[in-house]
Length: 133
Length: 133
DNA sequence: CCGTATCCCAGTGGATACTG
DNA sequence: CAGTATCCACTGGGATACGG
Image (cartoon, rainbow over the protein chains, first blue to last red):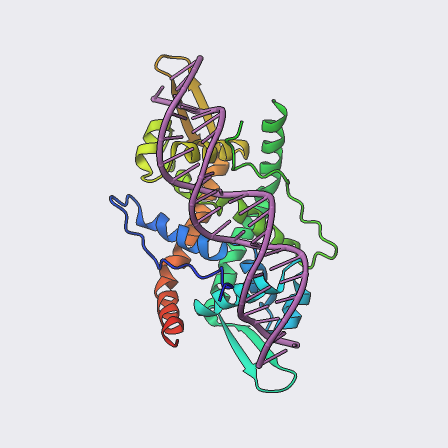
């Protein structure tokens, strides 16, 4: 299987020669978890209840079938959502956030709040930096 | 200059054909900002006051000179830290978090809290998923 | 409908060597 | 000391085609 680019092979290894700050290493872990291109978008799409594969695909413009599958598999593996297959034809598969998944969504909101509050500051800082050659 | 891999060229473009949720797009922006390999580690290293280049390098095991420079430049561009050059020999350059940078550090802590609370859940979920062939 | 298998490319980041 | 310049390996992720 050459799919599945979303599964980190090294599980929580915060062990370094002289690890100065384990806490920051945890932040890095979760950033690796939700920092990829589609994870938070998928989680957000599941915020208000279960969705099936094709609904997610339609609800997230721009995502490829491959990446949707890979992202869902990664989230399932980490226990952030559940995958339910209904043995009917045509096949139907439902994805739904676990309680753990919901807590992650809440955390993402604190990120969003920071972004909303400071996005203008950052934009002006960038323009200033870029325009002084 | 073939350095500077940290500068995103496209500024805040949350405009999509039918953008369903602008808020999530903001989360993606900030994740692109702090989701790279070294940014939060560097910010954390600056938590308790200004540091010079070589201090940062020593304080962050594993970071290359190139990536330290690139990360610092990106953070400076976004107004998250300031760079102060002292015209002495040998040269001395101090980096120091701006107030904006400190608020980002605070936000990173909420991420850390989530990670600390749920890292065990995720680990067990992974093992269960992986071991059922 | 719900995926997998391949191919392929741009971007990230490490190693190393060189400068003011 | 504080960077730049170059080269290069690896990975994330898009496009496409096929399969149960």
